[in-house]
Length: 441
Image 1 (tube, rainbow, N blue to C red):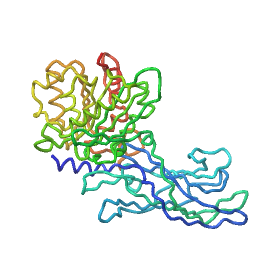
Image 2: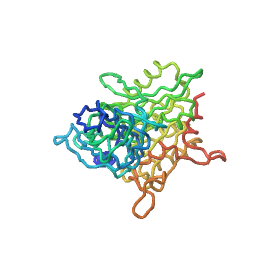
Image 3: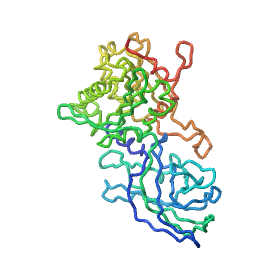
């Protein structure tokens, strides 16, 4: 089973942001009285369904240009990807397709007349690896930020009031913008010799206490960089305006294990975890330090390796959590006793998986556990079993024009997009609406 998890961690190949690397730069000549000072670029990364990807570049021309002076053919964009963790760091290189270009302000917002910056939006998609900002290292078994060296070369002249700009070659990076990810802070906590790192999001202050959503990452997001668990497969979306609106503002805590949650005391996925006590200690300490957290509304969830850990936490600390989201979970049903089923049946739980999941086949994991809970008398336990995992945005398709299909293990995509729903008490209810309604009191 460990090999299956390593394989899916590799195929996930989560993409997202560029590591801020300062690169040497060169610049072309400005015609006539147009004098150049310095040019540079910043990358912008967003976490998509397939992982984090660099969606655009904000180029600083250091000179005002009219809004109509730029087209998508003005610049050519080349990238070279590398990963310093590898013996041979080079990954790939090539030109990225610019699909839209416009003059902007420093933040990348379109201008009405003139601006010193140009935004180059690039083609992205689940199969376009040149846009990836994260790389899977088979040696460590983890994803990590890769280095992305961009070179923006001018192809067409830019006419301005002060002269014609031509011959620019821009390869100085001034950093990156990580959408949503930048809204998280990071930290670490230790318990009994075990150190866990974490990323956390704090909602805007208001006059009421706010719930806490805890999310436990999959196998490829372990390590010591706590931004990886929220960037690897869109967990940062718990901080999005849409999901936050269900809770009226919620804290988000994403702990990270240095190895795997499934590292048990006698073996991998043996029904225990050597990180369980340290995780519970981290959660309790975090709640104690954030007095604004509503202790009656603490929710926990996770996917795959993190779904395994979620099952352990609600098994052993069932009275602490108000509800749980369990996604493509990896705790074999045969490792759960009837007594444990009886003790968990009163906790609100929503299970999610896809029939095409070959990493943790639902028939061996989720389905029998769900059935046992229902047979034990569970009243608020739900299961969403999808046929497969496909793109629902309409943007990405296979060659036959049907929606692009992801690995069947990736059912977490539906959770992050809040596309898991069912009719409850005669009303269609999304998972987030259901979760936000749960309380211990």
